[in-house]
Image: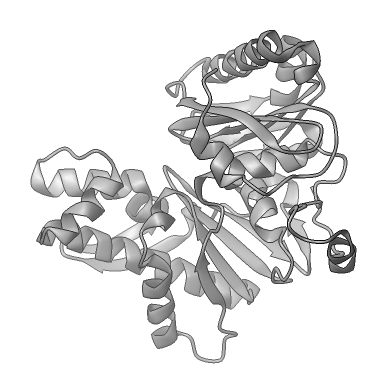
Length: 336
């Protein structure tokens, strides 16, 4: 496994607390991020590899990839370098049973992921949901809102929910906001359907290609074309923003969060938080106005969350720059 400076840089200064040396893995729709967590809780080595293609047996290919990574690191650094494995995956995840219930994008159902990892690696294994893990990392800092929602916009769209200071999952089914129904006027007519089908990175790229006949290298390519004056790219992006705004309005109406954090690949578009916030100002009435912001940890949030879950107390998020007294004063906890 080759050193990936992007991962270790993103996690710099953010230890997740002492514990067993562990392999933390964030399985995304297009990439798998892997990090080696040392006993201090610092990610010291890492890599990013392509996610195996969806379809029958994809879960076993991912487990094999994790197993190979663990063995490679143990060969490089010694057998004690990896004493546990913590993996987060997309879709509906029942952490209590170690079960990947369903993933629409990767195509699995009812996979006992935690047990498969234990059987293949011979190590203790923890599994969780990728977005809830990213939320755990984002919500972990001092001053985090007591009620907050983190929405990650990538190949799929999902949310981590923090209600009255605790993570809320409802057996793994909570937070599937990509399936919220939205109604958006677009240049092609009225779009009615799941948020994911208009505002995910996949949907944005597909919409542009459908309208122009030109293939693009993902949503980032579409957004780059806006700056070059591409009218179709701007229209596709406007439709996606409208859908994200509608979903946020529904979330605000139902949960009244103090903060909404936008994460995932699409959140790196600099103006997204301001654009959605401006649209909310025109539609919210009696509602509590949430503070909208981009995720601070970027694409490393899920990996850092997976690292946190490898510790005995996943609510611990230690920043070496802060004093021990400051850490004690902050208190609070986040449920697994």
